[in-house]
Image (cartoon, rainbow, N blue to C red; front, side, top):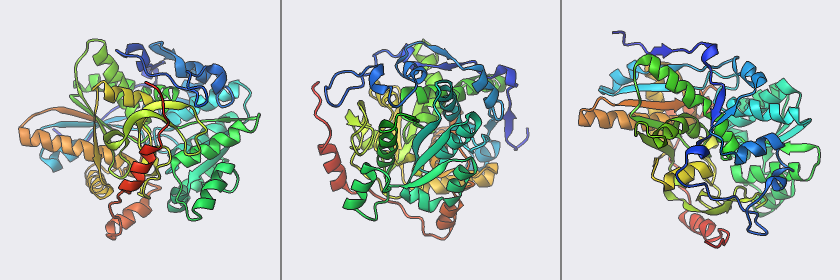
Length: 455
């Protein structure tokens, strides 16, 4: 048998025609989203200033299958179905009896899983007559994906990029501009939220929560602008389930079935994309699997956060959602996995954690880069810093199998490549990449400031 990785490709005709909505199979309904003023569940009208009605309907839907519009599937054919690989060389390097598979989302035009939701979001907005979208981005994967989708459907895109990532990743900014988007470092002087943050701290490194505040403020104060979000919300996670559905078909081709599924988690979208279809299968009476969410130790919402109602943004402009949160005022340290620097976790992922349908672990960035380099030298693909967390999680599981003598099947989502993140790899090889720790007192203060919501 060859030591090279084995690739499993689906014909485009087998690309899923529906997104999978896990809300249909939940044993307990998701806690409602609350209006911060009335503390009552919000309705579609409350979200209408930000999103077109088609996306609002998906956000609250409990239908198990939601059709993928044909124009969206046609765009997906630029890179989907995405390949599934068996990592035989990594298995050999680890000396593990485990069989390791990874779904590779770095084949998209933007280099990550993010276009899976950027394209439908842009299409639904275009169908509603929207000409301008605003959004936030950390590492730039989401911002470049929405910029790409906006170019396809004639929508002007403005991206508020977290300042530390804006400075660390100039080529992501260049990619956004290539697609026609405007990219602004956040916090900025263009919004009240940005100006307030800069007044308190002129060298503010930014955070996803703060960038969300700026993007939401622009959309909420301009009738001709809507807002698009790259993670966290139900409809975003819904769009990503095409990943897991394809993986199911490809694993059938391989004659295998995963025992362990691993994904990195920041807001929760790529993790949900790979894991939700398998969790749904389990909830409907199928095989029980271990589902492992891997997060950065410097921003550990699932492992250190509180399950509580909180704002999705720093300026407290968004509705209240129940999620694992570090507090909306929490500013994570400036580590390189910018896409994972968010204070909260998707409500659906948080809910599944509370139902004990998944487990969470946290690792520091140096160990994750070490895993990413090992993966690159074995498999040839350089992972994004965010994806390195999933690689680390998969390696830990493979070494556990080795220690226990178990031939388990491990599946993980390699959610993007690291071609625009080479400065981080350079820092790693130079010994300048260090593990970052958050301030315990700042975390305590942020958690103490959570909104008071009656049980």
